[in-house]
Length: 413
Image (cartoon, rainbow, N blue to C red; front, side, top):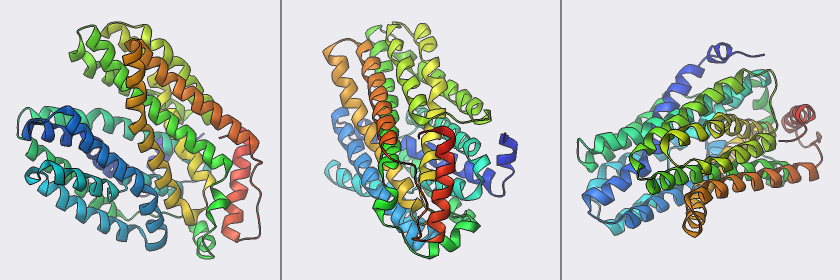
């Protein structure tokens, strides 16, 4: 069993996770920063702010695979330069942009968002051994949960003290600093034993984007949709109870328990199948709707919180194992894109369920979305035979052999 201490002892791992935490906290707060600017500085509606956030999210979803493919072909520093400079320009001019131009600029900024999350995942896959990878991805998921706890909260607190334009500058500065820090660190994106195989040629997309990869991407979409829906259901439940000011406390409990769950899961001797983790997450989410005030809601979200980081880390782990090194950037970018799509779809779907029933219907819709994604993922993974090595390249054959051994242990993604 690999300990977290062994993972953090890997050269470059600790600074990578630290820089990633800084940048991801800023990236998770960018939507809140834009919302505060549109509502407070431009004195417009939340619907108008939502359109700006939707434009940013659409850009991120479309840009992920494109930037990942560029990393595979052009290298890490080239892509970081091509994304850090536009981010610097965008966030500097946000306070002077009229609304219509801000819409288009937000889409462009999302399209060229610094790919911190996907780069971190690629680097983890390259820097760790097979035995270390699950614990490393658990730490990465914990960092992600911390960023969701810290980033938006800091933006909200700062917005009460300074102008929304200054808050936007601060978010942009953190994103740029994170991208520049990763460029200086320049972590390896391929292991030494993968470099030669990757140089022999880029496999065709249909060779790696098969039923098993589609299965795990579907589950990544499902968990993102579930988590977005849970956030909305928490707010709706407390608003009905007249306790909406306690929403931050419930969300904090959810985040902290997710961190605990990620640390515990990373220390376990064996992984669990992704479909099982996601299915359990969906099951424990549904009864959270039975809580009607904030203390009981804090208790009700503990089960879902404990399973969140393990599910997220397992999806990242399986994506890295199913992907040949020469296309890992595109695959991790695709993973980020489907997660963005899941977050974007989660709010309207769960919102409709809440409007059509009661706030508890939001938890039910979010949980059912997770269960459906787990079922689809399970069925897709069972329909596809385990990968076998082919003579297309030595590197691809080696990757597929490792995949086959992994799947033989766990049975499915």
